[in-house]
Structure formats: structure tokens, C-alpha cells
Image (cartoon, rainbow, N blue to C red):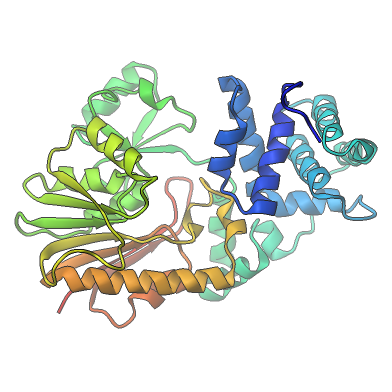
Length: 408
């Protein structure tokens, strides 16, 4: 096994470790990348992100590509190494000889005997075209159960169409709280390429990998990183007069701050259960300089709030993240049919509890960054729905579902 005390691990070595963390130990990619990237400079960190997320986005076509040359299934580390090597050969500008040699060097630290096999397979891939015949779920880069779920819900053509977007790195999306046009002009004068988002009057889109702290008004709390799909959901909330708005599952605070700016004379109560997420929530609230927000640590299924006491609610329920696979492609490997059903039950409990504390006639926005019908229509069934919308993922925004519910 590799001894990190004596040798500085390469980027490919670390990428193998991250993928093993995900597939063997069900760890989230963000957590594992952060842990494995310690000691890397900015360029190597970017490469680590590219290799890991690229493999996750293109997993199924990559697997078909290298598996055709295998006589037997390799051990986990060697298999992850083949994913990384194949991704480099098919989807990056890294020279073939460098992609192969770096992977061979990396696998030697895990399985020295597998080095010859990795070298031979990657050289064959470099000398052959990628397979053209893929099964529908492989072409969509989805687990078979997920593809079948979406195909049955909306048809193969729609599913394949929006799955193309899931295979690409997303743009940076912001909610800009000041004059949006003026902010865009300022950013363009500083050399950034920015454009107006269509789903929210606050939304601005920039190129991916934009250095966020360098943008105008960062230190002054002038904007928040936030995809325009959840911004769209926040814009759907009605509040005819000043009152109390509950933001349930508030961390990291994007929706909380947007609510605070939309309703400056109302009191926003940000509810978060996970104590590990509270520091980031509070840090964002401080940086973004909102003064009409309070934070409450509480279980969303057991709110310490009286019946019929809150004027409006934003419920951003925990979900399978199936709509944000552009940003978190590991999510398609961390959930299955059973976990989706369990999440749906939990979402329903949270919705019932939220409606308990909502005033009669008040409105609630139920929102999830999932597009599974089990976490969308099936959760809100039986309630008085004023409006609902599912946003399929595309190159400009994530997949998202929200519904406006009124309490009768």
C-alpha cells in the first residue's frame, strides 16, 4: 500500500483514492476531494476535480470503452485507474503517452502487478475509436434504474436530450442583490464574461471556474453563488405584507439571503438541523450583511413552533440531488430505488410538519433539486396546489422542482 509519509502522491493516485471512497465507501465526492487535495497547488487541485468529476459524468460510456479489452474484471483500484486513463484519452487534451504513463505509475503504488495490464489496456484505447453502440442508459450516462424511471415518466427523447447537459461542467450562477445590469458592466470592465439569467431578476451567469472572490462586491455581500433554478423557486413565494417567513433546511443560506432581500421588512427564520452546516450558514449571513434573519437549529420533522403561527414557508427538502448531476455527478451512484422511496417518505413528513405551523391561507413553497417524480408530484399529492413546475436540467440551469401550496 502507498506510504504517503515517504512519497508525495500524484494527482492520478489521489483521483483513484477519491473514486474508491465513492464506490466502496459511499462517500460524497466533495468531501473526499477536499481531503485528498491537501498539499496540492491550484492547478493540480483543478486537475483532480476534472478527473474525478469527468469520470463520474461519463462513467458508463468509459466503462464500455475499456471493458471490451478486459479478460476479467480487475480489482477496484485498477478499475478506477482505467476509468481515469480512459477519461483522459477521450475527453482531455493531455497527450496520450502522458495519460498512460501517469496512470501506470499511479497504479504501481496500489497493485504493482496490475501495471502491465493498465498499460496494455490504455494503449489499446489510445489506438482504437470509442465504441459507437451504447445502450440507452449508457448513452445517457445514467444507472439503468434511473434512466428507466425518467424514460417511463417523460419519454426517451426528452430524457436523452436533457441528459446531454448533465455530462458537462456547469456555468457559475449568481444571485446579484444590487442593480444587476450595473454589476454586469462592472464585472465586464474587470475582464469577466457575464450574462443575464432568465429565471430570476437576480440571476447572472459566468463561465465555470471563475474566481468568485475576485468578482465585484464580493466583500460587500453584493451577491451569492446560487443556481438560477432555486432562485426561480424563491421568486414564486408570495408574501402580501410583512411577517415571518420560515426557511426550512436553510444551509448554506442562498435561499435565506434571497428571501431577506426580497422581503426586507419581514423576519426570516432560517432553520437547520445539522450542526456541521450551521457555521457556513452563519458565515454566509454575516458576509452578505442581512439583518432580518435569525437562525434556529431544529429538526424539520419536529419544529419547536406553535400551530398556525408562520406567514409563509420555504421548504427546501433534502433529496437525491438528481437534478444537479452536473455539479454532483456522484449522486447517481449514492442512491437507488429504495433510498428514493425513503427520501420521499421523509419529505412528506417534513411537508406535513411545515403545514402545521403555517397560518391558514398562508403559502408554502416545496422545493427539491431532484426531478424524480417520487420526490416531486407524489410528495405534494392531496394538497391544494396553486402552481408547480419541474425544470429539466440544461446548460443554463440545474434540474429542479417546486410547488406553491396554500393551507386551507
